[in-house]
Length: 196
Image (cartoon, rainbow, N blue to C red; front, side, top):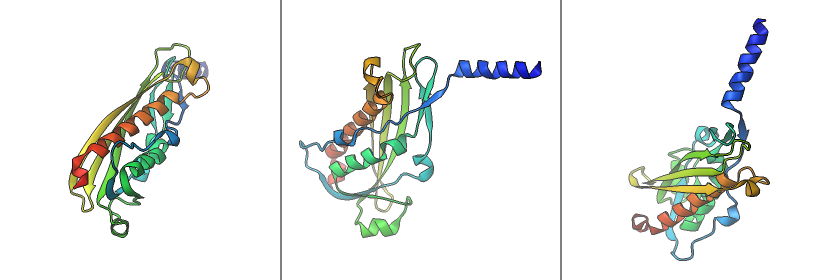
């Protein structure tokens, strides 16, 4: 009798909380295009994402009471790198926050640390993929010695309806990531502080 009650309570908890479906929100790299309207910043930069941040899993709402889970830093890193190469002269990935040897060898002027905050939702009671997705991307930029230069933040939005995402459950997330990265590219290209 006790086992039956336990099983029923577990099944009820699962039904109430829903389940988390794995998705990947990295955008199509080919869509992270260079903005030809503004000249690149002729500086060498590096970026740093710690391993625990890179592998951090995030869970946000989907439809039908379900949730989606993904690793935003890992999913977006390649596209983030591509975006930075569209803006700056060269881009280096740092193994540690203060990798002095790599900073010196690559003549790095700025170090960029990204912060990603996401959210998702769907009004659908029947399908789990999110129809709306938000990606807030912040870049904290310091000089090679770690002194603050500037911080820039953008918000990316992505929407997808059932007829679109039935072949790609991650579509709204990919669109939001792409939107955030292209907005950040524009903001960095327009930042006069980075051209000094």
